[in-house]
Length: 115
Image (cartoon, rainbow, N blue to C red):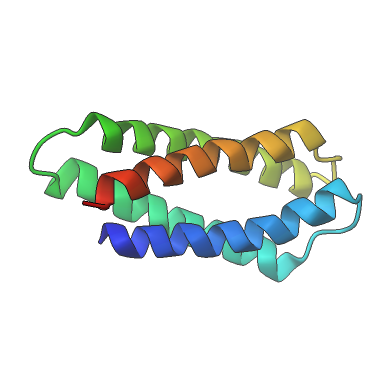
């Protein structure tokens, strides 16, 4: 389950890189990449949270930290999405901080999963 979540987060990161490049160059974002990015990330977070709250045998601080970071990144991504829907300019700093937080969460998840 967590391996699938990692694969989905990596796919979301690839789509996110496409979005970040467009935002930093002040170009319109690719709608397919935007939609896929959100879908991959949401499904990945759901899988992680199901594992944490239902299947995890004992509370691992690393996995809890990963979950918190991924949720924070998702909230940041949702904020960016809402700004985009309102046709407001996406702050470049927020567009850079969002993937950094997500990467930290993904890295913590990978470290937890690897033996």
